[in-house]
Image (cartoon, rainbow, N blue to C red; front, side):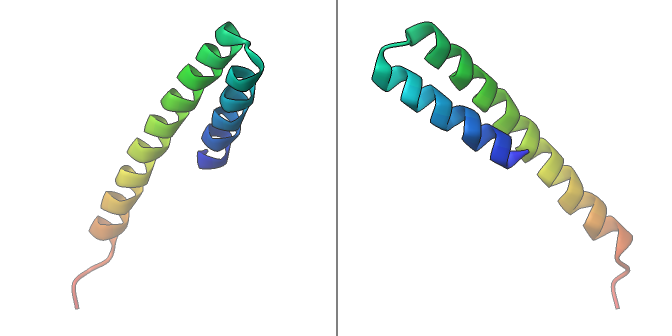
Length: 56
C-alpha cells in the first residue's frame, strides 16, 4: 500500500515538473488517500497484534 502511495507521489512530481497540472493534482490526491489508508491499516495492525499477544 505504501509503495503505491510513493509511486503516485513520484508520478505527481514528474507531472508537475513537466507542467501537467491536472494530472499532478489528481496523482497527489490519490497518493494522499493511499497514504492515510496505509496509516490506518498500520495502526489497526499494531492494535490487533498487541491484543493477541498475552502478557507473560
